[in-house]
Length: 605
Image: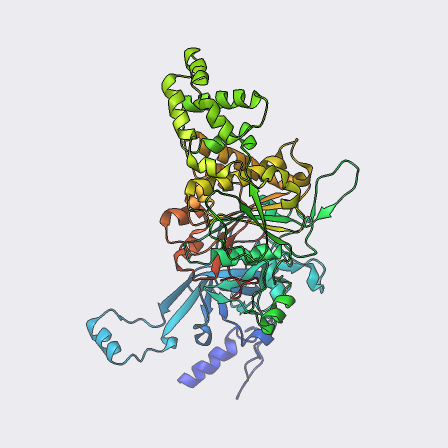
C-alpha cells in the first residue's frame, strides 16, 4: 500500500471525528468532522488578552497554602506586562482576580546561546525575535470575584481563591474600576489618599476618570473610622511627607465629615466635625488657611469627580507659645493666638522639668519637693519654686532629716534651675489650661509652630506639654468636657523624637502616655497621626497599635525592616519616587502601591 492509501486508512479508522465501528464506507475524497470548541468566556476580549493559562511547564495547582498558575504572554503584550500587574482569569460565572508575581523567559527552541560565537554574533547584529522565546507570567491568586445577586454589579463581592482556572483560559487586563476595588478590598468612599499604581504607573480603567482612587475607610459600617486606630507616614528626607500629610489631613476637614462623640448623659447622639491639632516643628503646616494658586481648572474637575477636598480651611488658627527672647514671624496668615505654659501643670507632670536627665534618687527628691511646694498657699510659679528650693533653710530641712541626700539635692537643683525653663513657664500670655475651648473646637485646624525657637529643649518642652494636655483630657475621667466630647486628630511630626525607646524616666512617661492613647483612642475619638523618617525608633508599644501605615521612599535598612511588609513590597521601598507610596492597612485593604496627587490641595511652599 502506498503512502496515500496509508493516510486514507488512518483517517478512516482513526477516532478523530467518528468511531471506527460507525465509520461509513468512503471511496473517494472525504471531509473531517468540524471541530467545535466550548466557549467559557467572552471572546470579545480576546484581542486585549495578555495570553493564556498554560500547563506546558508546571501543572495548574491551587491549594490552601499556595498555588501554581502559569500563563503564556503573547508577543504583542509583553512590553506592557509588569511585576505586580493585576489580571482577571474568567471562569464563566466568576472571575479569578490575581497579580503577576514572577516573569520569566524560556527558550522556544533548543539552542546553546551561552557561547562566544553566539554572543559576538548577537553583539554585532541582534536578530533575535520574540517568537524565539516563551514569555511566562506566574500568577498569585488574590480572590474570586462574583455577584451575590447575578446581574447586579453593585452586589459584586469577593471570597478566597477556591477554584482552579481551566488550561488555555485567557489572562485579561482588569479594565473595570469596581472589580479592582472589590478585588483589593478597597473602600469605594472615604478619605482619599491617592491612586492605585503598579511599578510607578497609575492603573487605568475604562471608567471616567480612568484612575482607581484609594480611600481610607471613614465610616462606622465595620467598626470605628480607621483614623481612630491611628496612622503613620514614614519616609526619608525630601520624599514629600509634608506634602502628602497636608493632602490627607485636608480630607478630614470636609463639612460633611462627622464622627460620633461620647454620650453626654442626656441620651442625645451627636456627631461633630473633628479638630486637627498639628505639632509643626518646621513651620510647614502654617499655610493650611490658604488655597493653592497652582491648582488648575482641570485639577479641580478631577478632584470633584473623586470627592477630593481641596482649598484652604478658613477655621485655621496658629497658636504661638510665648517664649522670652523669641517671637514668631513665620508664614502663617491665620489668626495668631499667644499662650504660655503655667508651672501649675508640673504638679501632676513632674517629668516636664526632668528633661535634663535626673538620676533615680534625684527624681524621687524632685517629686517630694514639688509635692511640698504645691501644698504651700499662694501662686505656684517656676520662679517661686526655684526660690523655694534654693533657700538654705529648706535645703537643710530636707538634708538634715534624711529626706534627700545632700548630693542628690544639690544635683537636682542645678538641673532644674535652668534658663530654658525660665523662658517658657509663666510668660505674659493666657495659660494654655485656660484656652481649651478655643483650641479643641469642632472643625478647626490648630497649628502649633516651634521652628522660631532656637533651643531644642524648649521646643521639646512645648510639644510634650501640648500632647499631654490633649491626651490627659481625652483619657482621664476628670478631663475637660470640651476636649472629651470633640473628635480629635493629634498630628505629631518628627514622632521619633518623642516616642523613641529609652530607659530614662522622661522617655518612659511619654511612651506610657501615648501607649494608653493608642490603645484607648478608638473609643475616645482620639486619632494619632504620626510622621517620621525613623520608624524603627518608635517604641513597639505605640508602633504596634498603628493600623494604617503609609510608606514612602526609605533607604535605611533598619527602617524598611521595621515596617514588616511582604518581601515583594519591601524590595520596592528604596526605589519609590516622590509621590509613590505603599499602603499597609490590613483593616482597610490588601497591601497596595499608590501614587498621591501631583498638586497640593492647600498652599505649599
